[in-house]
Amino acid sequence: MDGLLIFLRYCLKDGFDYKKGIALSHKKWYNTEVSKTVHKRVFITGVAGFLGSHLADAFIKKGWHVAGCDSLIGGYLDNVPEKVEFYQYDCTYLNSMRKILKGIDIVYHCAATAYEGFSVFSPHIVTKNIVDATVTVITAAIQNNVKRFVLCSSMARYGTNEVPFTEDMAPKPQDPYGIGKYATELMLRNLSETHGMEYVIAVPHNIIGPRQKYDDPYRNVASIMINLMLRKRQPIIYGDGQQKRCFSFVQDDISILEELGTSEAAVGEVVNIGPDKEFVTINQLAEVLARLLKFKLKPRYYPDRPNEVKFANCSADKARRLFGYNPTCDLETGLSEMISWIMSRGTKPFKYHLDIEIVNDKTPKTWKNKLF
Ligand SMILES: NC(=O)c1ccc[n+]([C@@H]2O[C@H](COP(=O)([O-])OP(=O)(O)OC[C@H]3O[C@@H](n4cnc5c(N)ncnc54)[C@H](O)[C@@H]3O)[C@@H](O)[C@H]2O)c1
Image (cartoon, rainbow, N blue to C red; front, side, top):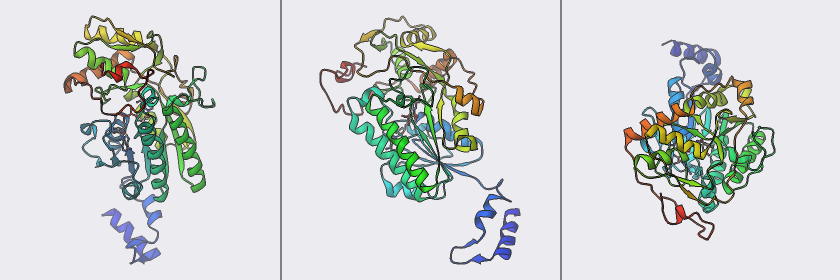
């Protein structure tokens, strides 16, 4: 009722455009007096995926209207929270994206075929869903005067830089996935600056938690190991297993991602998302999981995958400084939650759902011979 009275007051004061059917001062009216009652609208691409679906939950909790799309090339349909206005659309279709981004305030672009090692052998499918998809969503966002665009890039942008990776380092990606991600950052910066859209570049790394795909042989080392061990099978480790990563739990990172969409301090920034403590080897990861699952561990070792970075971890200083980033969940707790979630859904056989485009003597046997 209050909203209606304010609306009528503005119509009398500023006139009414019958053709458009809105008060001429509509924007001002929306932004000021009733802003508390008007839902803001966020659109999340890749909303059936891991990060996208958790982000959707966070914005629903804040009372925002959440819409999103996913082609279901990855993710799980039942990850999509009930209150999401969901479209099973592929981000590479400009006309569809233009239509569904109407009236959106903020876009989070989480959709991607986020395969680093696999991109060396299937660069076409991986970069199509990274470069083409991102350029399409950016274009549709600009067509619809979206206020802010948050791009999920990846730690793969840093490639062969010295660890810990800081945001001011010149990117040195060394595989098609990382090169594609960095290309989308350049594209976002260029188009946003030209057309006046706010942009933010999030750089997530090694985030784990429930809803992560665990039947995909090409990605998500912790989820794959849990699925294998629960199926009474030994985990597969590439190289000597001494490569190091820094894992973080999804709930610790979602609030920072939220800030990137809403805080003024984030505009135009590149921000690493993930912790810089608990740096563990892949061997140690397998050991912790085996202990939690009471599993007798004897990993199967296979040759290194080409171009895999040995030590990869990011500095979280910037996220701490700008947004008070303070992760509280340790690795063991995070892994335990993943185990519970996978057990509640049931284990699954691995699905080789994407073609290997380049098959030669460098292609990992694990994929060529479907060893997972
Ligand atoms: N999770 C991490 O640790 C991590 C690390 C680095 C970067 N990232 C980036 O964060 C984003 C989200 O990652 P995630 O872990 O949630 O991945 P995810 O695979 O769980 O989710 C991505 C979703 O995008 C969808 N998708 C792919 N191509 C699409 C297209 N063309 N149109 C519509 N939907 C499409 C997939 O179906 C999937 O559901 C990705 O951009 C990824 O590169 C994540």
